[in-house]
Image 1: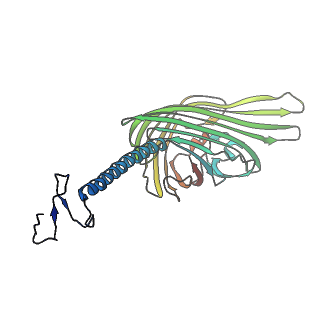
Image 2: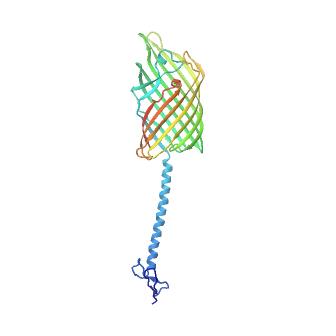
Length: 340
């Protein structure tokens, strides 16, 4: 038997084991048992295999997380408005002389038959779609005003280039705008049009982004009065029929924080009359205004939550003649949003 002592370390005894060419040591791991190298080799192999398995599981989790993030980049949101108001054209513009030189805005509240139609938004990193429909009845100055308005837009981006298209439609019916003992007059107007644009975008629509747009479009509007009498047949008079060219530039942005996403929009619109016909109508051949929108999306459960609240403030600077083509949202508006 050969024994050796080492200084500055614990005592280790070495033995020549029969039927083996390798020395076996007494160590704390084996508690003095023989063949300790075989025991440690098995433990090391188990340890290495567990580490390798953990690495494979970690890689699988990362891949699954990437797949989930890729799938979750597409969002479908439904916005339910909370404030039942719209900014509309003053009845004086319709009763006395349809519109005339300028449109006077008033706030109209829904008193009955308000259709709770949510606004649909679908968006991902490079895709953005919006559809909004309003259908309601407003009682204004003793008159019942039946309104229907719809707007939609679709845009997409490739690299930094952004292109889009949008459209809108508006219809209003006002029965008995004028009345007498043997007759009554009904008023109706329609407006429709669309626009296209191009621009630059950085970021994703579903998260943080900033976009610059510029585009052009056309708007058509028409108004009629229908006279009904007990003595004569009904007949319709064309009050106005105008066509406008519209150009715009806008800057929009959004910042996605863990529980809050502030956003803003600044848009300048220039309207120029191309054609007109009828007895009355808007006298201004051109006008412009600036639309400013700012607000925030509150996410109580974080970015992955379904329930959210959107608060938005809208201000217009310049002419109010865009009410010639439809209604505006109120200055303050809130939405309950569900995101899937």
